[in-house]
Amino acid sequence: MGTEPEQSPSPDAVALAFRLALDAARAFVGATAPNPPVGCAILEASGNVLAVAAHQRAGTSHSEALAIAECRAKGLGGAIHTIVVTLEPCNHFGRTPPCSEAILSTTAKAVWIGAADPNPAVVGGGAERLRAAGLTVRSIGALDPSLAASAQRLVEPFAKRMLTGLPWVTVKQAVDGSGAMIPPRGQKTFTSQDSLKLAHELRRRADAVLTGSGTILADAPEFTVRHVPDFVSRNRHLAILDRRRRVSTNYIDAATARGFRVLLPHSLADALHQLGEAGALEVLVEAGPLLTESVLVSPFWDEHVRITADKDGPDRVEVLSQPHSFALTERS
Ligand code: AOF
Ligand code: ZN
Image 1 (spheres, rainbow, N blue to C red):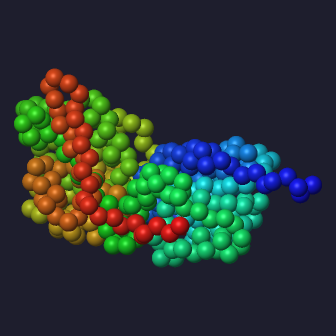
Image 2: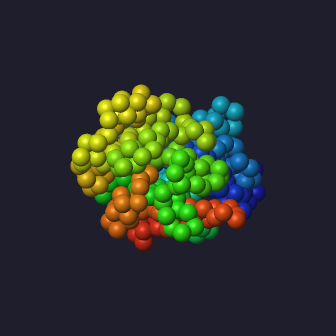
Image 3: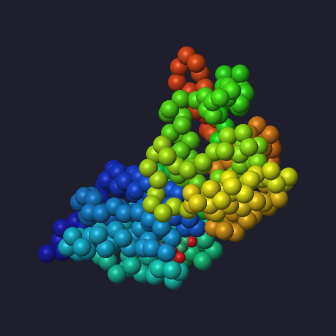
């Protein structure tokens, strides 16, 4: 009794569990606004994974609380040793009680954190609280910097809104081999089925679509998620830049009936401020050449997904990023 060396999960087991937590969180990107997507995995001392969970929707349980509850439901609460979580555990009473206290109510001895929480109500507090209570708290970056980078990317839209009030902006652009964005007459698209699926994945993760009146007059797009499964009862914003009020009330009524909250902002900046205010984390720009270009020359965009059709092979997908970061510097 008490003479055996204490066992704890190997670095490989921690890294594997962290990947499971990232995957769990990624499945809910687009469902959690205004909260960030967060994933958590719990290991026993041997490194065996006891539970994996993700935060699914604002107002519902956080990932740590869900994973802890899952262990207890399986009768494995006493085996909890190490908790890995993609975001620093919260230390505040929001809509749910603090995860730091939930963790302290378990037998956990160690916590690995992916990214710091940029929420001013949390910042540093969760990690400090756990350390003060005697737990080993470490950044996953110390084990594998690429895991920390993945966790950071996951929280970036949330961080941008927390720190600037503005949502993360992804610009989707489909072009043909010559760089033109306009499909041949009678066609709405010219890219492949895979690219269409990618476009719908981008829509699924967005809390809002931003477009211009020209696109609506030309194509009357539905802007719904159809080529991949969508989250249930998901309402998105549809912001239409339409200074001349050319879009018909019929189109707006039909969009509203499809579940969109339609906004008619008077400028790009106004659109993004309104959407940030409304809690949107991610905005997808799906527009014609002029609006697309005006977003890309502005300081507002974050990611540019450029899909180039190729008659002779698969479409080429490039993802360009605005060189900035909204996440706080990592603490170890
Ligand atoms: C965590 N785990 O799974 C998430 C966290 O209103 P509440 O109670 O849901 O708190 C929301 C805040 O909690 C949110 O702004 C962010 O700082 C953090 N999100 N924290 O420990 C989670 N989703
Ligand atoms: Zn929490």
